[in-house]
Image 1: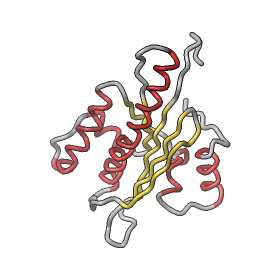
Image 2 (image 1 turned 90 degrees about the horizontal axis):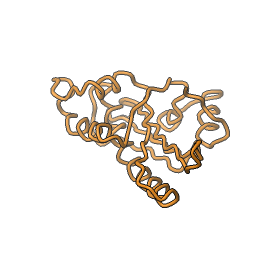
Image 3 (image 1 turned 180 degrees about the vertical axis):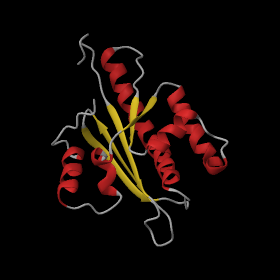
Image 4 (image 1 turned 180 degrees about the horizontal axis):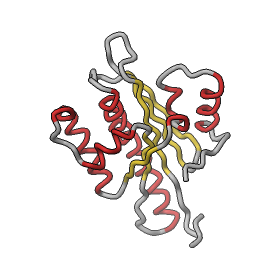
Length: 174
């Protein structure tokens, strides 16, 4: 509950990709959805398109994460509205470790030659941000908990991602 006694929820979507890691040149996307710090869903898959740059692979992953996170956001938002008897809109936070993706998304660069083929994905994600139901925040690579779903991690890096994703450790991002 917040300081007004209202039930509050925090929905975070962690999105990460590994560029060109498959034999056919496709990338891998990973998404972890957390509600109040607890992982409620995870998804990893081989991307269906070949991207020409790591930033493009991250943009594809971010759109997939937004799509998956939207359902969770709407579900949790409905629960909050019922519990609080109001029409408060819940904002989901999409965590991204690629600063270029955030810059492209924030600048609205949809007609650049390098990203023209990703225009629809950019518009869709930007519509979520513009409507106030989503925001995108940068997170350092070492704190990107979806990382262990895109590639093999060893030792401390794996344990850290696993502990945060499973709710055993809380990452203070502020």
